[in-house]
Length: 141
Image (tube, rainbow, N blue to C red):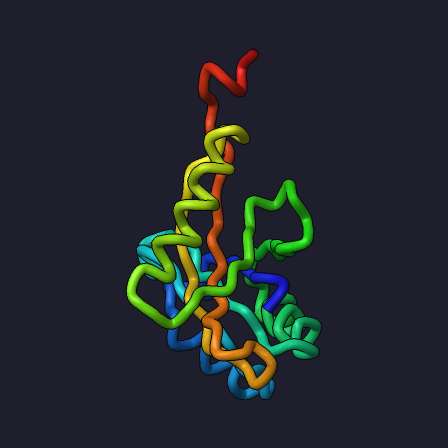
């Protein structure tokens, strides 16, 4: 779950079901998905299963979706992959860490995508926290 694909699911008219159907037809398994206002011009964010990234973007290319790929390993992408303990306060603790780091970088959290634990996640829940750059007095100096 080291990358995330973000797209506006519009293939005239906007249709999330159609996009998900196309991904499913191509055999792409999604291990996390989220978004807001997805049929009102907002972005759908999804994470294909490891090894299926090229298949997912091929579907988007085939049907003319505009998209961008964010990688958690790229510090400039704004995407942070965290592992959350499955207990009360687990998400809060990790979110607080990201929010604190964001202050120094002039970023704010745009959205959160919660994934499903894989066999190798040791009971932790993978979560993508996506933050965007904003202009603040700190970032202008």
